[in-house]
Amino acid sequence: MVFGRKARASAPEAAGRPVDLPRDEMAFRKVYQRLLLAQEITAVFRPGDRRFPAWRGYAPGEAVTARVIARVGSDALGVPPVFNEVRVPIRIHDVALLEAASLGPEDFAGCSPDVCDVAALTAHLEGIYQRPLAEYGGVVTRIRFHYLAPPSRRSLWRPA
Image 1 (cartoon, rainbow, N blue to C red):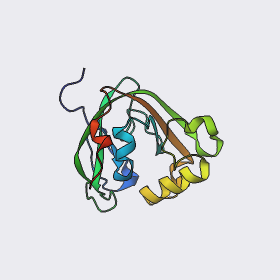
Image 2 (tube, rainbow, N blue to C red):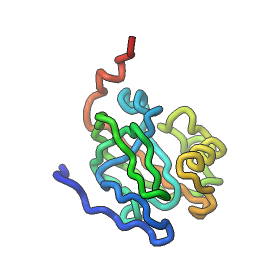
Image 3 (cartoon, rainbow, N blue to C red):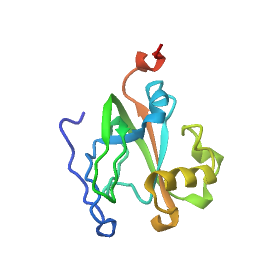
């Protein structure tokens, strides 16, 4: 079990002045909150090499907290994201650096339904990070994880 915050990995020099986020957290867009709370998502992709000790990297076996972004930030502007109250404990069990162009259907198992092939993944990552995947060397990191607590009842809540 991990207590407190883990050390932060240093950002790459070429990235300018990106926001330094806690290593023991993994950010999810609000659109994925329902999937996260229902434990229906077990894999994510991030651009470039996100294997620890790389910047914003993760390692197999790490317990981290999945957080939901309420207001997006900007590394380019040095603006951190704002998170909502959702905190979901997860354990990372696989971190793989992969050539994006070589991904097959099996590589997308556990991902959100909108990230189901290379074209969708590329559009997704380029939309979020506002940089072409080629700037990351055409590689992505697939992070697979499992949940450390039962599904939240909040996933069943719907506003009136």
